[in-house]
Image (cartoon, rainbow, N blue to C red; front, side, top):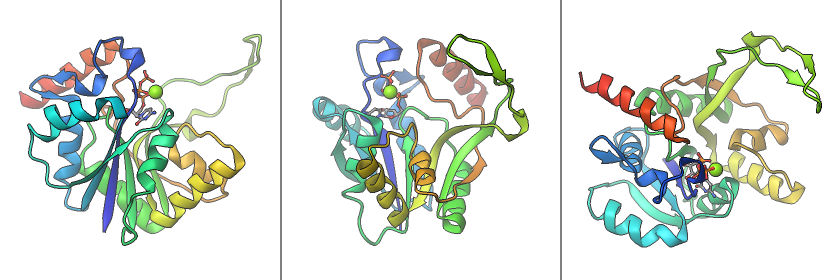
Amino acid sequence: MNTAIILAAGKGTRMKKNINKQYLMLKDEPMIVKTIDVLETTPLIDEIIIVINKEEKEYFKKFILNQYTFKKISQVVDGGSQRQESVYNALLVVEEKTNIVLIHDGARPFVTHEMIERCIHGALEFDAASTGVPIKETIKIITKNQIVKDTPNRENIWVTQTPQAFKLDVIKSAHQYAIEQKITGTDDAMLVEQMGKKVKMVKGDYQNLKITTPEDLIIAETILNKKTT
Ligand code: CTP
Ligand code: MG
């Protein structure tokens, strides 16, 4: 059995709107509905746990859960103040019989079935897998005074996205280890790496953007218009 965790408990501060970005309409549907829908319709996903911030739980139930028919959402969990804490809260309620846990940002509605499948297969083989894409630009490592120290080889640099998928025991121990060692990771794969375990990188897509700032809404609309024509 494979369980997906969808994170929707952020505040969306960089979007600068009066509602959380996950509830913004992308064409005909709220962003979070588009995201849930892709996971719902992936046969390899059996169950979905969604993480919502406490103050928005009523809103989520009224305007999302009651308006759309999702069959795989088994639990709605309270978010934490940081993303890592939100993931941890969800991990605490994942059923023991789960083999793979797939973690995905609610703010990435352009995830596809193929990406989810590649990620799960990666986790089945390597215990931990992250979606990502090769970087398009040149990276500079700089000093505190903004002097360039190094230009790493671009061929070996990928940008991480979600989904990321893990064997249940691996991601649980990684989060436990992070708490003990006071490690804050910017993604879940990083916590697994910190334990000294390997993470497989699988191909995502440049379109699988995380909708973060108002400019991203314009890109999102362009992607959606292209899809329907
Ligand atoms: N997230 C979460 N719990 C948090 C913080 C973030 O579940 N405490 C989720 C967000 O809802 C989002 C994903 O993690 O789907 C990626 O985070 P980000 O894009 O940074 O979203 P926000 O934190 O909401 O945005 P911002 O940082 O601009 O406030
Ligand atoms: Mg954030």
